[in-house]
Structures are given as structure tokens and as C-alpha cells.
Length: 479
Image (cartoon, rainbow, N blue to C red; front, side):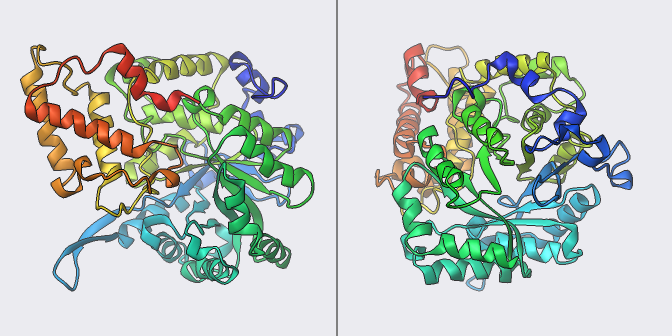
């Protein structure tokens, strides 16, 4: 149950946050009374159009670029291994180019993890950043001890020290307990029983960790338990990372999570402002709706402006694989143009339209991988979502364009996902479910997609999209 005292009415969202650029740059400590130049650090030569918008951490004084680089999706390239088989590795040259452009345009916050890109993200990030003075950027990484084999104090400490080794640094600016959720006992096993939480607090005192926080995927009740540790003085959370975007604000718990942090003056880090790219890959009529208001801006810019407008937000993370994405996001935040009340209302109405589409809430985080049976789970779900958004999912054999759409769907499915990695190989072991931050019932979705594909192959599809099925498919909106 949400607390009525801390829940924002959607019309009051902008009024509460402040619509001016000064209020936008203020941090959770209430520094809206400071002069603008104290809250926003204009880049000068950093950007010819005004410079990157910065936020100030209320305790350390860190001036953090509001756009942070999420390092979970560095570009990959295919090479041949020693066995002659083709494999994917991180394209370090391209990573360096992206970091160079980001640094030149004011981005100084880089978020990685030992779990990203099969354990290679920290190394690639460290190689790129090592070429710059250490004081010119902030590094965030995580204690990603998900597997039970890493719960011991020895294994967890090894992961912690290895992060600094991989990134070639001797201190971490922002360190997170990775992906806390509803299972509080799991939190105790990963961080309390093994003494890691007290150890990390000592590391903070020693200066090897500058800020200690956590990332969160769970419900309101679980969130309250982690914040209670802060309220009681067991641990001081210097920041908290939550999933927040204009679709989740009302449909999920984002509004409640943000308000609880703002009330405590805890700076907020935002992940998934685009829901893994889903808010940039929208149905055509939604794209037209947003372009009608801002024809010169990208569809993605709406999501980034929403995430950056609240004054308690310290930084908004984006996993920018391509240079064009990086350039577009820099343009959105150089400087940030906060949402007006009218624009915010328009965006919430747009979210209502988006939620009617039966896409699966996969963010391509790949936490569900590797599948023990070789299934490419993200590729299957993302291909299906792409077809839904494009309106290219066959609906009924009686439709005039059914034959063309049927063939196109089956051909594109085979191209997107190799036969041996398709949904029909799922055995329902459920190992993927507990790792999914979006709480997707993955085996059920794979079965549903496989049944749909089989009906297309057998040419027996009939009335698959009745209204009640659309509601069932959109189960992720249910709480």
C-alpha cells in the first residue's frame, strides 16, 4: 500500500519538482537556494550549445553529469577463436572512441559491474578510462555476488578487490550492493551473515569506497526494509539506484520509491530510463504523437527529460552502444530542458496508450543468461516485441495480408534466433525467473510464443488477439 502522504498526484508532479532549470539542478539536500552556477556546472568548451547539466551530491560535493554511461551494453565484435569458431568480444577500440566522445562532452559518471558482458565490462571500462586523470571521472561498480558460490566472505572480498584490479583504480567512487529485491533473507546471506556490509563500511571510512548504496528491483514493502536500515543508523545509504521512467511511474512502484528517497534526501540514480530501449522503439502511432509535440527531438529524449527533471535525481544512466545514441542523449542534457506540467501530462497520457500494447517487459539486461538449455531468451522476447510494435504480428487467417505477414514473421524469427536457441527448447526449469529484474514469467512467455509460432507453421492461427488475450499477455501491469 502506498503512503498517501508521499504519493504524488500526477498533475502535481512538476509542481512538486519545480519546473525551472535551477530547481532541476538542485539536489536532494534542498540546495535550490544556491546560486545557479553552484548547482549547474556549465561545460563552457564542453558543449557549444550550453554544456552538460550537472548535479551536486549533497554530502561529498561531487559534480556529477546528469547523463551517466551505463557500461552493460558496450559494443561487441565477432572474431574467430583458437578453435576456429566465431565468438563475440568487446570492441575495445569502439569503447575507447565512445568514452573519448563522452568525456569531451561532459559525461563523468561510468557505471559497470563484474556481472556485465560475461565479466568483461569492468576491464573494458578501465582500459578506456585509464587514459584520463583519475579525478576527471567517477566510477560506479557493484558487489554482484548473485551465485551462492560467491556468498562467502572470501569470495565476496575477492570480487570487490578484483573490481579495482580490473579497472586499474585504487578506490571506487560509487559502490552498490547489486540488485536487492523482495527476499530479505537473500540480502542477509549475501551481505550480512558473511560480514561484508560492515567490511564495506570500513572500506568507506578508509576512503577506498567514497559512496555506498544499492540498486533495487522489488516491491514497496521490501524497499521500506532496506531504508529502515538507513533510518536506524545501521548503514548510511549515500545513494540508491532505482528503475524509473514515465511508463513505470504509475504502472510500477517508481513513484513510491522516488518519493521515499527524496523525503530522506538520499540522491537517486536512475536505471532503465528507456526500459532497455523499449521507450525508443514504439509503435508508429505513438512515435507520431510524440513527434507532433517535439518534431526536432528524438522519441528517446522524452524519456530522458522525464528521468532528469526530478530534483533528487543525481544521475540518469544509459547504456549507449552506438555513437548516435550517445550524441542524441548528450544533446538532450546539454543543457536539460525540464518537463513542463503540460508536457508531463501529455507524457502520462502517452504511457497509457503504450501500456495497451501486449509487449513483454524485457529490457535485454541478459540477467537470465546463459540458459542451461542454450535458449537465447532476450533475442526471442525482443524479436516478438519488435513485431508487435511494428504491427507485423499475424492475427487471423482471414486477414487480407495474413499470408505475407505469416511468412515475414517466421523468416524474421529464424534470422533473429537460431533454430537450436528458439523457444521450443524451453523445458520450464524456471532458473531464469529468479534472475529477472522485471519479474517476467519467462517460461510462460516462451511457451506462448512457441505455441504462436507453431500455429503459424501449421497455418491454424485464428483470432489470437481477442481483447481478453491482450489483457493476459500484458500481465506485467498487474501487481
